[in-house]
Length: 329
Picture 1 (cartoon, one colour):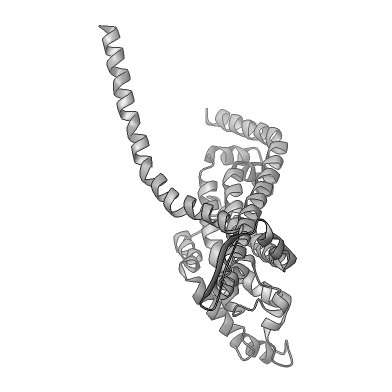
Picture 2 (tube, rainbow, N blue to C red; picture 1 turned 30 degrees about the vertical axis):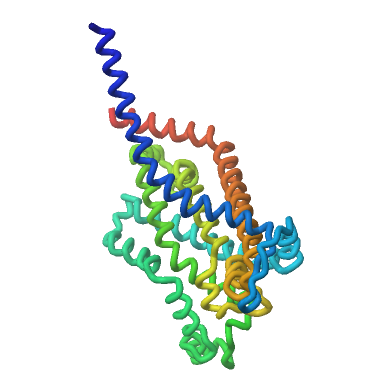
């Protein structure tokens, strides 16, 4: 009798398990059709000569690695450097301010009022289209715009100027736009990570006399590291794919000598203007490899630092929990 019951139980488990695979089928179908197949086609185009001149279409003709040689003989390294610089200019203030706001909003000791209102306000720029942001800042920082006019009235500058003719000025404005668009989203994610930390750890740290800085660096950051790594990597992927605000603000020129032209702007030019699908495929592959490489570096670096401090940090956390538990008893 017992054997029969065990056999029936196993059959039920097997029959229920299949639904997990069935529910995954739509995801894999969508992924293969809209992501995997186009990705493989992009890899394939990168090895072919395939472009249009007017109404005449050349190719596809297999040329091996010629497209890669052409793009690296061009300015792709310069555009890659511009992209990394713009990402760094954005990510440093974004992560710093988002971490600060996340800790402030979740700190019960501060007893901040209206946190729900502030969360909504800081997230709202994320809902605005990038094109609208680009056009708005283009008008604000125009040579006859309100920013320049205000600086002249205050005596900070003597004559009108065009910030688009300044290399670092243009980069700073593009980084500012990207920061305003995404720091709210980053703050919400980090807040969720901080709120997921056991409150008893903070209570024990307070009882032990730990100050705010020590608590942040020895408790909050170590326990927040998984979500922090996720946010940095997703920000990195978004930074490498930076296109819309830079394209609109610089009107596609990339400012002075292409100093703010990104890899995505270069790719857009190859597809939209030159219609060179072979070289565009090669640039796409380079973007894919660069994103994967930088993401791996960020993950390896942060994970290594986490491992170096993990023993000491876990020991401190364990001590705080133990003391808090004793206090509760």
